[in-house]
Length: 531
Image 1 (cartoon, helix red, strand yellow):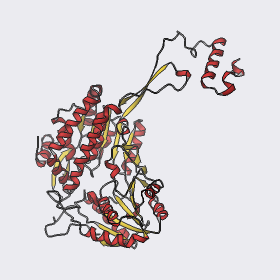
Image 2 (cartoon, one colour):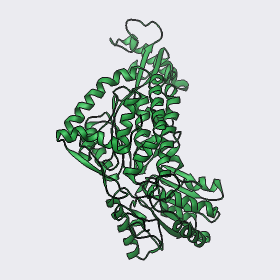
Image 3 (cartoon, one colour):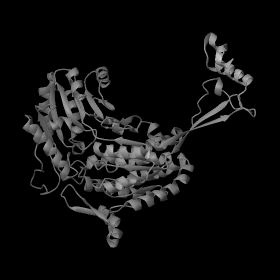
Image 4 (spheres, rainbow, N blue to C red):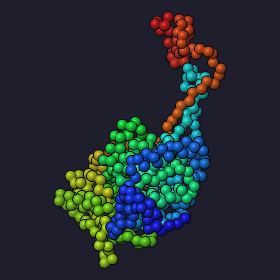
């Protein structure tokens, strides 16, 4: 069933308006108009939803990964069948250009395909071999049991890819899922919940809209938290999870460095910097946020970067190809970018293109959250734009003498999400990668790891705990491991090591233990205390 975005937004709030329940406003960052008023889900309702989901989860897990995969593949087909509507919704609430929004569809479908095809194999029980004579008669089994209820608290920058990329593996693992989307971009998640219902999904997936209080209530009710967002909020969630003794995975902020060495392909490196730094208006956790260019290529790199950045089309579009860089998510985000640029200029940096908020052009809206692609030079680590997460369309470029200086500066950060190295020598790039204090390194590429389910997306330092994806671990992280040991042979009434302790039995037990674990001449020698 395909709906217009306006109809879907209105459907989501009609009942709440009639009942006078708490609501919050969703605005389009393109022109600041109100596009929806959604329910503020209260703590009591979160608790009721959690109880309902827990009641349905046991049967969902018992159905097995093959059955669960069929439901997720139906949801995948629903996403593809409703692609145009989902793209409209993503653009409406995030301000992304069409091509950036389409990236979310592709990446989301790919994650479902990857885990749906492998879930049964990844969740198979393991049977380790006994390691020695003491347990040689035991059959060992390690099984994977889903956390009953997973809470996914997702950010505003990827309203489809991150919620679905986290929820799909959790559902395939056998968990029930509460998805709490950002209050800035909840409409896509609401549509995702509608899609799950339309494909006949059991009541193991619900979308609960609201602000921070709703997210806190979700954390208080679930058995596992997957959070993506700011380091500040992530720390608060980690504290609450520790108080409740539940596991959490936190994908937090980043200040990702890009290193460009003298032997790099100039055009390729410039293209990587532009797409890596400006995709989604720079509002990507793994965006290129600071660039270190070796002296021999620096001047040519900056000249070409400025030329190409100035030629990018900044605006909104209704069809693919209209613009490259869209709006920012909110005025608050524009204010952060503005403050970083102003601080850099005050400390001696130069703006070579962009630098001021707003959208130029005769047809530009008079309101909205806009900031153009901005290239800065003469930057250093005293500046906010080189130290704090900007999360905007800025490309600060710093000259370095050699790879050692580039690595030292790249590591001079409290963050450690990912990094990029551009060089003509792959082995050189791999050597540098091993020196960088980040969870992922892309060589001659940018944030490819984000769309590579076989490898983990993990943050070091202040960039988080745990990891998204990572092959089998991307599914198993939503599970608890259970060990089962069973005797494979008939056993006497009293095991050798059991009560009662008797001198003869103890001497025999000591001899058996030494035969099992000892080495050399000591294998047959009992200790004096046991004689």
